[in-house]
Amino acid sequence: MNRLYHVPLSPFCRKVRLVLAEKRIEVELVEERYWEQDADFLRRNPAGKVPVLRMDGRVMAESQAICEYLDEIVPDPQLLPRKPEDRYEVRRLCAWFDDKFHHEVTANLLYERVNKKITKMGYPESRNVKAGAKAIKYHLDYMHWLLDQRRWLAGDAMSLADFAAAAHISALDYISDVDWNRSANVKDWYAKIKSRPAFRGLLADQVPGFPPSVQYADLDF
Ligand SMILES: N[C@@H](CCC(=O)N[C@@H](CS)C(=O)NCC(=O)O)C(=O)O
Image 1 (cartoon, rainbow, N blue to C red):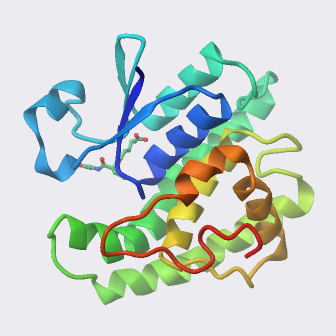
Image 2 (tube, rainbow, N blue to C red; image 1 turned 45 degrees about the horizontal axis):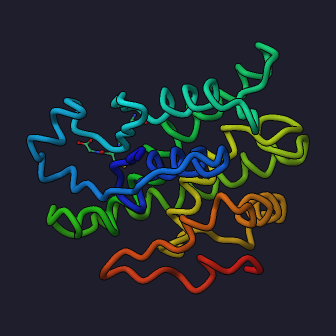
């Protein structure tokens, strides 16, 4: 059986879970308390990070490398377009969300509010939470602008960029940190992706001590 070592609200794990589900690849989810630095876990991934996917006797780390690998071995639905310039745009936006958005928004909101408590690393730093709350506005505006010109974030077809973005946004929506009134474009895009069968697993997540926001699992939010 394939196994994904993950934590439920990790955006990188969520991106891989969405891709696995879209491609109907069955996987057993195993929660990995990466902060405990278990020796078996470090043997699987010396970088000490989740997600880690064990599949067909191979152990793989790094969410983007995993997702691109999955797209190559199971091409349907295709998440990286064929044309180099389209593929470039998908990869640019994956990096936008997994690097810039992660650093400016996810780390300041989700990691401050949730990860710090779970990993017993102290209390949220209000300066960081404020910076995250400010930055998410700009990012939602950027998504709004992209979606004014395109049906999906990277073009007219759904792609890995949509899953990278939805992985972060869904984790932030779990803790009620997305203002759904800021952009009709972003709300419509998220409603579309949230209603995909691949999203069901994420919407069923429950983190002890952190109940999901009221709209988190609601498809009519
Ligand atoms: N570039 C990595 C980032 C993975 C990552 O940072 N995962 C976090 C959880 S959201 C983690 O395991 N952090 C542990 C650490 O940095 O020591 C990927 O895309 O897989």
